[in-house]
Length: 490
Image 1 (cartoon, rainbow, N blue to C red):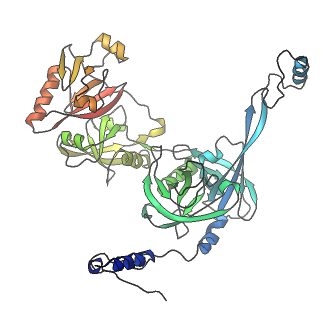
Image 2: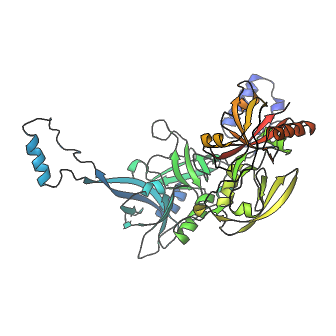
Image 3: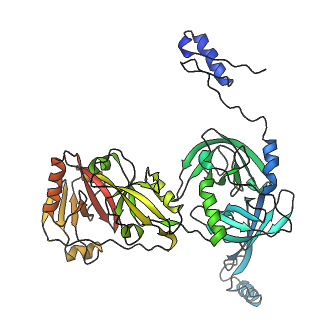
């Protein structure tokens, strides 16, 4: 019989009482902290057997075969140069067509996947089937079918396959990964280490993990994931797929309880596009952006360090809509933007050609722009134009700066019409050096206004001080790549 115990820590005064309270916590009893209110915790499932039985028919093993070229002479006997048998073996290899030709050998790989429709569409990781000549799908009951690749997306490591079956196939559906909470139970299925169908269980350890991609949104789990689990499903307790097992973090190649599954919120959109077009078609805003730091927020006059700061607006949808360098994107299509990573994901998951409202912070107030998104896969970046200037030199904010001339443009590999102030030297004790400015950087803007002379830069510094700001916002270009830097003017 289950018993509920409520412990008030305000009532505990003796060490023995503390130990008793800790024991109560360890046994999973409901405990209240200070207020005397019971805290209900959901218990672990009695068994995962029913869930495993429910979904196992839709989980598959994937075997791939790849033809790879073996270098000439590989696995051939090594004959010392000058040996009396050297000519004999060379003549033998030539007669058999193996002299200077490359031979072929077969390679194979194992992975996992899952069926998402009764007509045979299967989801897996791109790295499981990449460069494969043959793909064979093995079902839970032992049946095997060949598969063809419908489309792949290396950016999220997702691939969509298709098999032809005479009968409808058991399949699973995607769940809402956004509803998954840290601590929720999950179950992973797949083909770890080539051992065949296997089940492991754990919890959601973390949400929103990023590894290396622009569109990463991984669920971290301690459910055992090993090599061969790649492409397999991560289920919630309702039997819905909330992630695709993709990677592990391990010093030895085995599971140490840190596995990553690409969230279904990303995967579902990719799968829909691959199914419809055979490729991805992501939205494209057409801006270069950076995160807003506390110092940048102060220099911009923002109340909080949030949003995505626009550093450059080449030709594209954003430029057509009137967006400018120095704008801070606060919301996109009705949803707040916390940082650059979130904006990239939101834009990429939005349909090409859709007109969206983008709210920006500009000159101390907000404006709403209507932007019709382009397609990222076909977008071409066009460098932003600069302005004219006249040659003057001076030291400002710990930097020696000079106006661009033809000689400096040539040395820095800049366009003929490029303008701004070139940093020729930086004091190592200055805030500018600490913030990463170096010789060769070009200051294009100060205080969100273009600068073509040292006098204009000094005026912007005076304006910032008069406005009571601690920092001045600079737009700095290095090798053509722009970024904003907030320098102290105190």
